[in-house]
Length: 372
Image: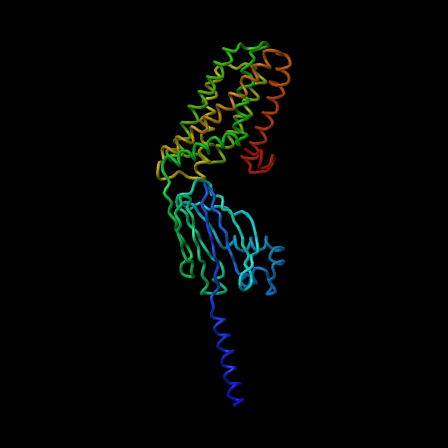
């Protein structure tokens, strides 16, 4: 009798162990689309993190202490793309929650896509190497109230999520992108400053308001027409210039404007020179569109909107600088010539040459923030 009981107990224990061994691991993933970003909240049972942490003694305190390690492990195995462009991941939060059995690590990742999301691809490679029967239960809110669900398995690791975006939505996004590019494009801003600092002075005397306005209108119009031509042509693939060549050319245009301000003071036909340099700057603007791409829906409208955004940003800079520079020049001509024209142009030449060295020879001089 006792012998039979021992045999039954052994069989029960073996069955229980076998059942546990065949229980597949599960991860829950909640995704939310918001503008250009995709937020992914990943919940992982504590028992599934032993490999990432290098220990089977997983506690809530250990999870919190090693949240960066958990993030690195998960972010390397869950990738998000938008129209084949990779959306870089960023750590966005972490929490530990208790469950009926054990606890979960809740990791929040923000995937920053270069442009508004239209066709999303999520690649999931968590735990399949440890558990071939692992499953990842995912659901996504694509931002218009629509919820979709998917189960990642060993033979189904990629989820394609299409999202309808209207041509007007794309246009608004690219308009904003154009404005942002001008406001963060320090090289383009410095080029405009080099053009404008002699708008308030001619020779040794202050230029009248009307004459200064006409001067400014000519160079801004020439620059706008020129860079619009090359921006649109390059974005549509009609002409192509290597990025290093165009970016080096932009740097040289900045240095030349500064040198001309110092050597000539009031150069004639500057609007014509500005037109030539504008063609070069247009290729620089087109580099942004090459990086983020153009949508299939409303491609031309998005391209024109980006160009319009560049113009809006440019007009804002000119509208701020021209009155200020003219006011100072009209009151203190000698001081303006020394402090603004000569010192300012000297700095413009310096930055232009340093940028040229960086871009032409691929060496780091000014650093990323000021590298244009």
